[in-house]
Image (cartoon, rainbow, N blue to C red; front, side):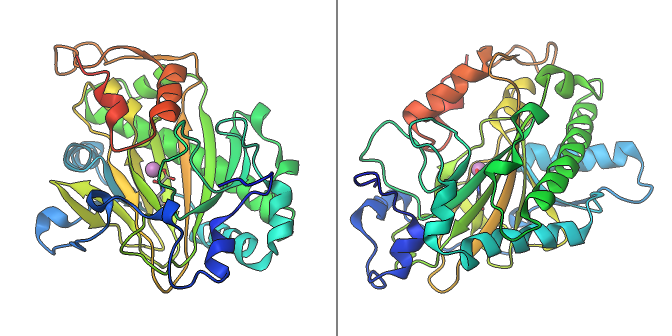
Length: 347
Ligand code: OGA
Ligand code: NI
């Protein structure tokens, strides 16, 4: 989609003369289309909501975490310690960047299309095959941890508080991620610092995704089905739904809960827990009327870190040890497509 050095953003397609039909590159094959909108109200379709506040006993809390991580690999948390005004603030600066700045201004922050996972404003997953179907999504990726990767001068200068809000949000999300990884470890009978120590230094990225309204939501996806590569993702949405989690061959829509933070286990958590906890397969659908915004904060290890099942957990080991950097490279080579990457590590 990058023609003669002129990067195309989905937002500019959506705003142009293409109000009735999306370009063919965005049309999903039949089997991937979001054809059956199913979000039954049966109990097994209710995504767990876990209250981290108050004086709940640790074993009760860990029981809730365990059941959510076993059944879903994803859950909402409330009373998470992050102020709601900060959640609102980052949603506000995120939409302001996408909606209030002219395209030419936004493109000053364009990511480097020659370098995978580079920071900045972009609109496609870097996959090897050029015939891959494209996501109906633009995004801004920020490198936030370790601090040596954090360079706010590369982030938007508008609105004026943009960079300050991202930095504060980044710090608070890291604290919450470490807390959750501690609870996840404890809930499996591991020392509470087990996963944090296995990760070593935490690499954190914050991706603000913008899904313009789409003239043909029934043919497209905002983000194709995948599981996240790292350990734990913390996601918030604006008030338009679109994120879906796979459960028993069904897609369950994640309600935008403005006070809650949505926790998604990534593939490395599945590996280190020896499959006791599963990473959640998820995707984003598009909306025919409204644009949608989400903010995902990813927590990964360094590329050189080895990840393997915790000894003694649900033996025998079911996954091969992996160097995280190799895992990431194979992801970028093959594309996300469900969970193919982690399946390759199964013993
Ligand atoms: C992601 C992701 C979902 C969303 O960025 O990995 O799954 O709702 N995002 O934007
Ligand atoms: Ni994801």
